[in-house]
Length: 464
Image 1 (cartoon, helix red, strand yellow):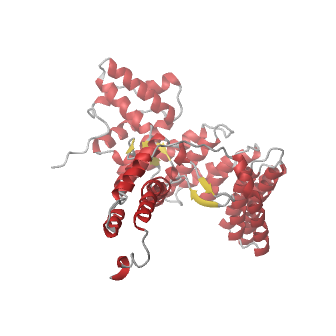
Image 2: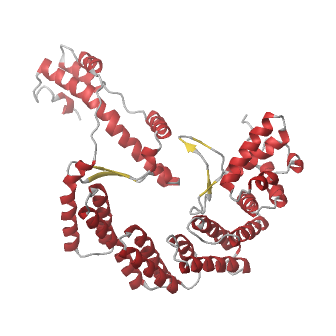
Image 3: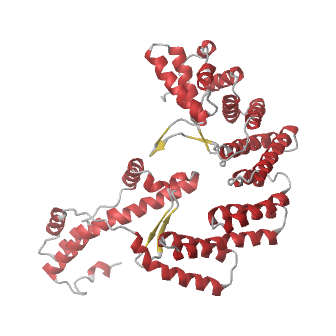
């Protein structure tokens, strides 16, 4: 017999009717779900302490729903957990059950705050597939966007809201008036950002590129212009953002030659960035090497002539030996004498065959479930080590391993990266340790005791 899944909302559906949840938002002048989640959590704890159970249930539920982490680039899973560590995570929309959805719909209908209504209707649409809730979410996102003027502080939030609004409206039909009104809102916001020369206008331009909104040629030309201005002040990272967008805009309207030209300009910024870094007064050879590697790969994929690629690779090899200067060496000592002695004792036998059999069973096979658990615990304890992309290099500065920072990945790609990291961890730590403390001492002990020849070892392969 299996346990019945528990609703996220732990109270009665009737509880929220007498609770003025909007007051928590109004008193703080809160305007975003992330902040509201914290406020509702504090209100939940306060209500719990004084025995107001109905209020506590409502506030706790709203804290959870407002705490869903938006990841709108992932259309299949637009909301993820607020916190995830190892095999544990905070709730996500898929955890909501029937009573939860009833409460969400009722609260969304009752609230007067657009940001809260948008989130609740959005989550209700995801779980209940109610087209009415989908439309209501879009309308509230539109209202929220219309209250915001694009500036450097709000532009990332605006981009997220526009992307989600367009995605939801597209579900109801791109030919519908609702989608067209959201599309116009996105184009108008992008044009305002460009006219105000906002440094981060690219985040809005990216949205109109994704949905192919407005005059793509105009946006391509504007993106090229912004890229040139950032190149002039050696801000190559931002120039790349705009050049990649220009390429995207040109591609959307079938201008493949212009699109490829913008891509090549973007690739060249990596090369210039590397050369400028190396020539600076206090160069970071790690940055110079990383930029040049990316530039070579980008140019190679774009079909750059082989002679140029070879020349850049020679330059990369010249930088390599300088990388060690940028790194700090750290060492630590571990006493493994007992482990080594036990390994030697295990293979001490007068008979060579018996010694070799003991040698064969000296090391146990790696337990994959244990290895997975061990890596999960490391990620939980040291998340920064696995959050960002990292490269491992050899003494010549050549990359021998690349980790994409798999905690940001989802689905199959996340599992593949996790498995790769499992085996790398086993190779770097467990297998290396076993080779040095068990396998090598055992081998030397057998050699010392028996001095075997090839003839003595022939039986190992004789009957294979």
